[in-house]
Length: 148
Image (tube, rainbow, N blue to C red; front, side, top):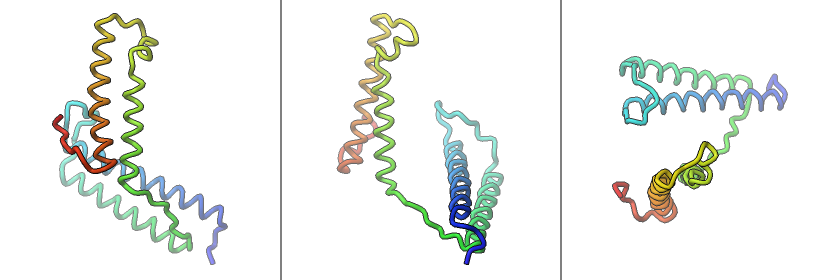
């Protein structure tokens, strides 16, 4: 029998899952920073040994989290989603962001002349096409040609 009420158990599990998510985001950020692109928002100033040490600490923390759940008899109830579904859903959200970048919406930030409107439409149409190709790939596994 757990020394904690169900409400306490749920809260602790929620906190532990949030800690895990944040560490996973930091893991992904460290991976991303190792592949610098012109759009990167972080500079990788960690040595490979430092990154490995941080990941080791994360693993120790995860092990401790699991141990505490077990010690307090808190059931590890995690709703898992398909990675394919998560990617597909997020790609649709990104496509909505591109759709919202239309000239009428951007004119709220100030007037757009004809040349500005044409530039925005060109960007929007190009990115919308690329996201549509990605959505088609995710939907049926065809048209995997990212160089288009």
